[in-house]
Image (cartoon, rainbow, N blue to C red):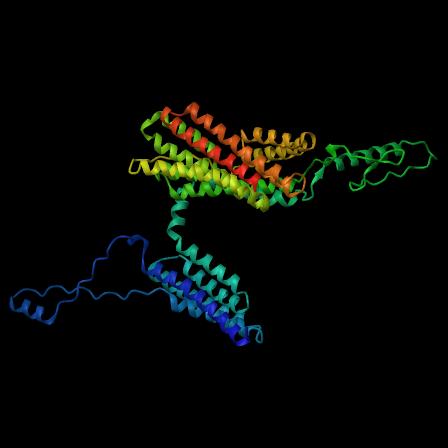
Length: 509
């Protein structure tokens, strides 16, 4: 691109950034949230001269004239913010030759913004700083765009505009929060930020621990040798060099020497799981109570499909008439589960996720199709209710999941080393009884590290998902009403058949 065209493009991006933010600011300033859905009363025009003369002739006092409408202060909008962005861009453009121009322009803009803020605060009593901060950000983003970072500036502009446009939603969300939610988020954030960098990034292998113990034992024996005896040099532990027998022939390392654990990876995946669960919890807070059993089941599937299945099954005994709606919620929660697992695996190893797309996708599609069929049959029936979902950003559940994940990760290596694929499959089935995320992440990380075959890892994860679904089907059968039991178990059977069919098709490809 020619230099002139490049400069024009950058200034165009800056102008678009200012116009985008300014459009939102002007719309928010002229459409008060308090007047949403309500029509403003029109101002009455002052009486005309003929009306006054008629009133005087009739001996009546002239009708009081409506006070002239006070001028409405138009908030800074598209033009102002566009000019601010271009000003920032011009300051950055000239700043290559006049270095002090950009800070000086920022000070001038800041002074103008401060003067406007003080004027509006004295006149209206509004102490909000949203528009003023947005003006400063617009000026800086215009400078960033002209400086050459157009993609970063445009992305930040979209993010800023989104935050500004979601004002009412964000306020409603904060109103639904509780003090326990704030404390849980803060505690988990502090522990994640402090603990994660302190954990060793390199995996800790059992062979390394054994080698260090042997070296320490050799040092102790040398320290206890009689005076004058020549000290024996202990060789440094080397994982790459195989052990050698006295005859010089290489000796294979014991299988348990290869078992390893990366503490930082374990904690990172704990944070990942909690973050995904917290997204579902946030959605439940945003949607609020009374949004319906179906929506609650779908959102609850991001947090815990087991909790949704058990809660809805117990509720079906209290309200048998809601069994079809409850079944829809259970099916949606369990259709979300394989998609959630697929997302988590994709973060760890994309190749494993691509192979899982067919069986887990078929499983989710079958559950969603059954839920849609129920919806079409039961359209118009009442279906309000909610599941009490706990905040997943708690420290104790996170630590428990980390311990479970570490144990599953070690056991998966032991099972693969001692029993091969059969051991991995058995562990996957057993682990899926309680938690499908831990075994899914453990097997995918094993495949990514080259310690497990791709096919074995994929089949093991599918078996864990099947085992988890069977357990939830048992909970529904035990605690649910007969009508819910019939609907759910048939649909679960279709989901399991779809998962098995997906694995078979994957093997045939």
